[in-house]
Length: 231
Image (tube, rainbow, N blue to C red; front, side):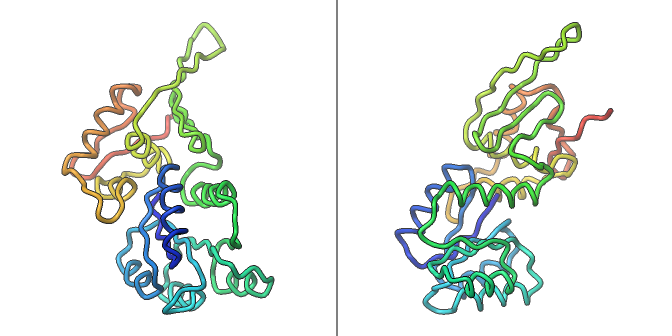
């Protein structure tokens, strides 16, 4: 998931960005409301974390402009304004959630996971498709070894690099929907980060070596897909 972080406190922004990246999010940061609106003119983000006390435009005006532009991206307001009136106004202006500073990082992550589940096909942090099970909270992947003569299943953890996990997560959360290389790249790289031309293909190749045959399928000239198993 790619997040646009709109926060003018550089120290807080850097700490947030580092923490979110460790959790597998891709985070682009701007410190001004006008820069946020410019960035959102090109659809590439899945969610916005928005501070209200911005130096050029009040965050509520930014939010109002976002919604006026028919942009329905989820918005979490992150602000020092903790009055009931401010929360009500933020939600009335179209925010999906409101978190007052100071906040606990684990609470923010939990709220982000709720929005992730709403945007994707999964209704919990555990996604299981065919014999592959992924826990998006613990960042672990398991392979279920089905024994026809035994009701029990052996569960083996499969280890992937951070980028490989993020590719698999993007595909499993969108199971049944084709994901283009560009869509997958947008979940992997932040602004200014170097992208190798064959990076996605390399990650897919490594994933396939440890996953069931044909679990990740090519759609020639379009992208990749993980299909739901047919019953």
